[in-house]
Amino acid sequence: MPVIPDTYTTLSAMITPALFMTANGSLIISTSNRMSRVVDRIRQLNLEADELCRGASGLDFLDDRLEHVTVQLSRMMTRSDLIRLALTLLYLAMAMYVGTSLTMALDALVGGYFVAVPTTLAIVGVSLMLAACVQLTREARVALRNNRLEILFYQKLRNQRGCPPASTKQTPSG
Image (tube, rainbow, N blue to C red):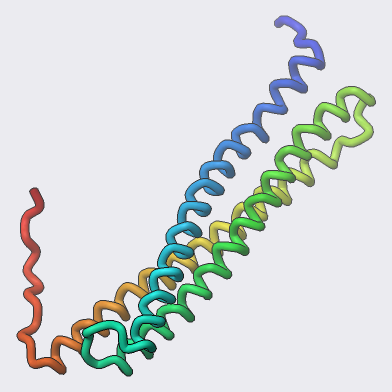
């Protein structure tokens, strides 16, 4: 069996944090996109609230609509906070993975004095990534709950107008 130099063993070991960095980077990108959508929705709701307060819209049930927008904004702030926390955790996890890789290289250079450090950093990184995923799950639940409340609100408005209920039959797409 051929003997593998320590350099190759170290470089091979440094690939594992790179895989974690790739997964973490994907989560950072998708979470940043979620944040952008929340920011866009907050801006839209603020404009809607301003129009309702000025009486600039020709809509009915202004008080109900303004209350609904206020509740929506509150939920958007909750979503924003959860996403901000998730992004913070993801960036810290990325730092841990980079630190894992770096300390593996340093450990190889100095002859094994940092043996526990790379493993500890990797464990911390994975833990931070797990915590971020929990926050993103919480944010997704708030988002879906918000969608349900919005549907119910507009159903209530249609009922107050005496409109027939919308059909619940699904139409084929295409």
